[in-house]
Length: 325
Length: 259
Image 1 (cartoon, one colour):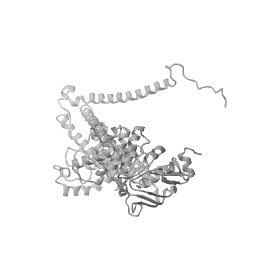
Image 2: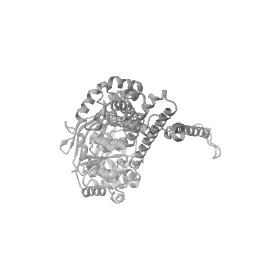
Image 3: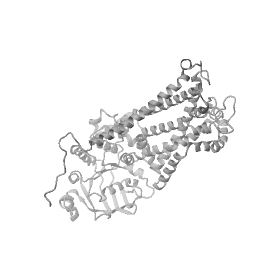
Image 4: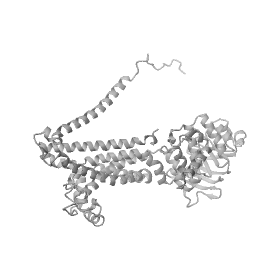
């Protein structure tokens, strides 16, 4: 043994610590990143608000008495807001159970050699550009759905959603709000599925075994441990998917043949969404028309914000029982 | 209630790897039996094969027979879910369901069985199980608080209450005290002594004093080397295993001599 080993050098004094500079740089970087996102958000909000003032209050901020497209801005925008929310809500209703099902299949049911390829295929769906979904929905899916819509109208026509809109008959092209919703559902499926799968996989093994040791079947074990554990995550996944559906432009623009608001989901030439409205009209818009469209964008911004805040609230309500403590 | 366990030439495999080889053991009802041995010797694997929990690992299977009284739990057509409702299990780390209150945790097994009961019946079951786990007085004022808010030792006793609530025939414990402090450990050991009045208790432990304190019979498991299957080396009265073992390996292990 060599007795003349040199002791590792120790810092002198208590104030200076090696690596303190790195700490400062990194904390500065993260702070800058955090501030940047807030600044960008603030600028977007300010831009939207200023540019939409003429539409929100024509008598104060413009030389016109009213906006171009309707008597008041609200008359103009509420059908679009309703259409946007309706299309997204239906898409989420369709996509959520499927996403949870696929997520569970991959995380808890499928053997690994099947689960991995299925996961890849789902992720691949996210890589398809939305214009391709639009083209697919318009030329392939829409005609395919026409007979189904007619069937729905014949047998479930007493439900307003499947009735004929006033002064029109059931679609013959299939380019309706419901078709747009279905395309949206397919588009948000990958993100909802991969989030659900990740959360399901994180359920502690400990709790799953506890349920199984009590004599739970696989499904009972999932109900007892996986779902309660994943609830907050599922809500986040759904909200993220909803955010995407609310803002989706290209696919809806291509699939939907827009028009006035109607509860009927299966009539062409009815309903529209804010993003599609903006995309279709913005290139030729100027002055008041442009302000109207930007104000509609502001409304979409507010809807998205509200959706996210609601999601946060739902998640935080059950914090104590979440398993995070 | 309370059944004997008989293993006949039981082998446990993970895929092609034989983890436990040729175990023959008879465990009497209403007794405490301890499994001791070095890590990786197959005692936990064998314990988990007693309620077919090892099957949750893909590729795991068993060759041989295992009887609860006269019923072979590996006979064709036996549902592992049924086996597990008869053979309860307590794990190394306390694992109350975090999304459930103390009360709901105790009732979890009954909820699974779909038992319909009035609130007062449920209250009785909860109180009886919690008293059985020496926990009632500590939690009676916070039945509706989350079970994960209790201390580690309380959580482990809550898990025992949850297991006892469904009145199984056998209770398996996989190092139930290894994550607990000495006082909580003592509370669990006292509890084990009470549990054997009604149940067949099998406990895996790394703490030899614990095995000596709580068990009537002890089984020593060992492996010959890496990649070799674990084997049950000796099974006898606890006092014999610790004081006068017949096998040299057992003697060296309980005396703390290795290598």
